[in-house]
Picture (tube, rainbow, N blue to C red):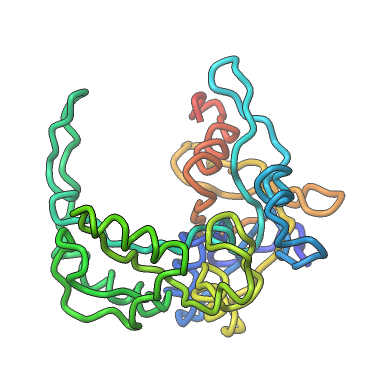
Length: 284
C-alpha cells in the first residue's frame, strides 16, 4: 500500500539497476526507504519464449509513443520490477582505460571522465561478483587490467557460435568470448540466447535478483510497484524537492520524503524533471 502524506526518509524512483543498486547500498542505514516502480512484477505466461511474440509483436515492450521532433516512434523500453535489466543481453564488459580519457572524434572532442579507470576498478570487481559474471581474462587483448579474476569461468560457445568462431579463426581473424552475467543453463530456458528474452528466475543476473532482493531483506526497505511518479514538487525557493505526486491505483497520492533519488532511466528521468516545471524552474 501507498499512503497519502507518508514521510519516508528516502524515496527512490525506479527499481532498475541504478535504483536497485542505491537501495542495496543504503539498506543497512535503518533509514525508511521507499522504492517506487511504475511497472509490475514480470511473470512468465504461455508463449513467453515465442521469438515471434517477443521480437515481432513486442509482447513485453511498453505501449507508448515517443517523439523525435514531430516524428513519432515506439521506444524499445520495458516497465517491470528490475527495469530493462529483466530483458538485457547479459553482456557485461568493462570499459577500457582509454574510454575514461579525453577522446578526439571526427565530430569533436569527448571530454575525460571526472575519475579514472583505476579509481573505478574495485567497484567493477564488486559489481562482477554481485552479477555473477563469467569470463576469461586475457582472451580479449584490449581488456583493461584487473585486480581480481572473473568470479566464474567463461561460458562455452553455443554450437552455432562455435562453428562461426572456428571459421573466423581459420581465416586469420582473432576472436574472444564475451563476459556474461549468466551461464550455459540459460539455454535450457530460452531457445536462443540473451537479448529481449524475459528473465523470471535466476539463470541470468539482473537488477532484481542481484541487487533489489538483498535490499528488500531489510525491514526498512519497501517496494511499491504499479506506482508512476507524475511530478516532483519543489519548495518555494525552487532548490529542493518537498513532495512527489504518484499515480497509484485510481488515485493521485502525495509522498513527502526527506530525500529523493530519481533513477528512472536516462529518458524517463529527464521526462520526469521536465514534467516538474514550476515558476522557479520553468524549464523543469
